[in-house]
Length: 294
Image (cartoon, rainbow, N blue to C red):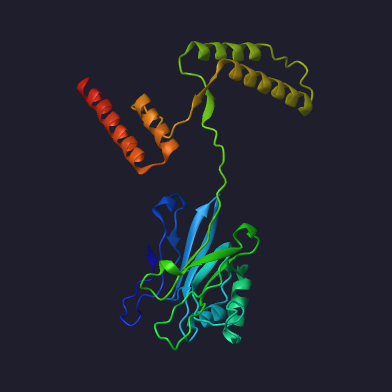
């Protein structure tokens, strides 16, 4: 959970961002030195050696956040999305509302400067539901997304999820393509017969290198390339493919492999707990035997 907690009692909490623990590898963090306004949360994360930002804001009826963003004029690169309760009614995103607000022009200018475009929902229903019969429901919760992400060009409003709240949930689905990850590599066991044979082949290739005609850089490069090819051939001939495991440790055994494969197939919580239980038991058994032999 990320929030701007202040000591002032009148600055009560209005913006909170939750990040699922399954995304912890992306190292989500709260950025406090770029935008310092109490109703703005600037979250950043890392992926593919790049930093990306998420902005979560709340606009009061005075539009204080918009005024702050306009005055600061901060240029934030790689903003993925900006979302929140904007408290602006406009026919630009609410077709049932026939008026236009000047605040929406400022909002669009700010989001455009951040390379963000307005997302339209797949179901045009209200996002805020009034507690009074005289006051109409409205669309004031919005999502803006980085330009160019065509596969994420809309979101869905779930009014049935709001329960006793007056605001509905806005969701967007991010499709993640399945990728094949190579989990094997060529290896030669230390002190093995294959290692001795590999070294013998390398020494033989070194002894056959003819350096009598090294008259220029080109001839030197040709010798280096030939030797490199010889090493690759010898390595591929003497080595064998082994599986790369996350827990490539001396205590890891076949039971760990078995339960890990079962979990990968089912993705069930029960099988994950069984795998962790097997790992714990295997490690304890291994190190207990180590201590007994000392």
